Amino acid sequence: MPVHIVRLLLLLATFLILAVAARNYVLDPSYYRFGDYRSDAVIEIAADPPQFRGPAYCQACHAERHTEWTAGVHRNVKCEVCHGAAREHPADGPLPKPDDTIKLCTVCHEAMPTRPATHPQIVVAEHPVPHDGPLQCLTCHNPHSPKVGGQPRLTADQATNAPVAAETAAAVQLSPRMVELTTPCTPCHGADGRNSAMSAALAGGERDMLARKLQEYRSGALQHSIMNAVTSPLTDEDIADLAEHYASLPGGPTQ
Amino acid sequence: MTQDPSKDKSGRRAFLRNAGKALAGAMGGGALLADSAARDEHVAGATGTQSFPTEEYDWKEHRWAYGIDATRCIGCLRCVEACKTENGVAGDAHHFRTWVERYVYLDGEDKAHVDSHHDPQNIAASGSESEYRFDNRYKDANVTKAFFVPKMCNHCEHPSCVQVCPVGATFRTEDGVVLIDKEYCIGCEYCVQACPYGARFFDDETRTSDKCTWCYHRITKGLQPACVEVCPVEARIFGDLNDPSSPVSEFISKNRVQVLKPETGNAPACFYVGLDKEVS
Image (tube, rainbow over all chains, first blue to last red; front, side, top):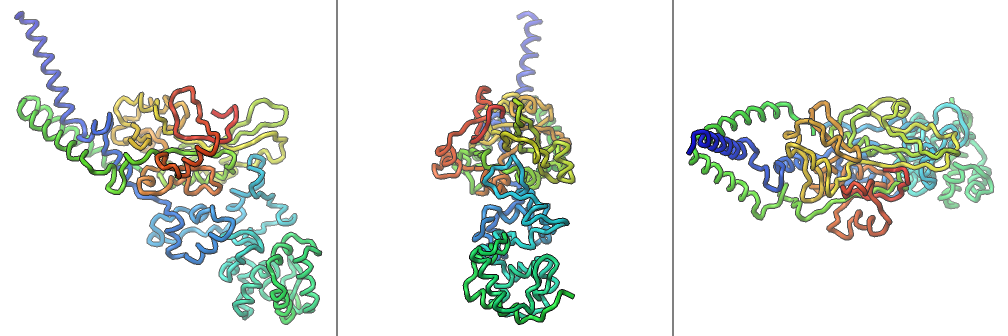
């Protein structure tokens, strides 16, 4: 065989050996297992820990909130949409409780022509009535079940989240039933019924007059978007008790 | 999914070690054969009856697909934010695995105005690059038609990105998810250019390509992808096509669905309802 052919064959053989060796030693052993890729990469990606844990994870400790939330119209808005990813909570600290509810709620509910017409939307400055200055959504709405006056009512605990209620809640001793009944009233009228800044003062009013007004709001004879909504679930007995309660409180404007 | 920088170094070290071994192996044919046999054994052992990629999850039993109902989307961008949190995507507005486009037709105009969360006006409205919201620039405009369209990787059956990858760093899994092997990716960005949907981007931190994984680490644990988990209006639907009662199977069977750019032959696995002529 001519020398130049032998040299060529030797060169080819060296390349072949190098190529086979490279495939065996340099390539990850999991390459080609399922296809032209390193299948261990799939194992690595699948091993990442989830950050969002889902409502069932929250329910383990916050069962009461969970029940309240599943009964309301926000049941499709999961805990972590507003409170952020649970991650390893509670071990790695508390989750945020958004305090600027105008900013938070308008992310979904600000009126925009692009949003489906069926989606509930508001113009902040005109909701519920035209107003100046900030009026936090939490004043009237329970974020876990936001329909005003709908079932279930705000819990006593929730009412203390409302900024107006927080100041005066401690001043008045109430039975659990009255706490529940007055919860929707407190944000605007004050726990002592004397807040006249954005509503009528109730404390020290005439019992029969208060009851009649509540009945008229409930029937729609008197028109007021918030009052019509919050009175709609009330029974006659509820109305009588509420009138009795506010009539019995000492009158006069908030100090 | 942030890559550990130490991995890079150990990878390089392992490469040199293996290259050394290869050279030694090349010198002795017998040793080469023995090692080759050992490798075959490794593969055979792994492909037995075991489930893959985890003990609880076998990818042969699933075929994932995604549904998007554009008529429901309210453009709240919780999906964009959740995706970033879940997958550790860079915090600025210009790197993202999923996004939402706003299409607005104004009275007397033929073409739609299109914007997304990284539009400067929208960044200004949200207050920072790590918060996401659409501004309300059309509130007083005479809008004739307007809607939102969520977008993401389509996890195509014939993905062009996989076709062009020169190092086998991107691939389609047996359960229908297109993934990126961050260790093998050399950051050449061929895939970024090949994707007809603009679903991929270059991650400056890891120097690799990045894109949606349908939260592969979640779906293999029986969870929903993060964007589906947080969508408040059920505009995003995910499930297993092998299960006729899964949300996505019902979505496809009960609606008239379409895919983006069917003419590319990519055969996407994201099915849309409520698109319009200008959406592609």
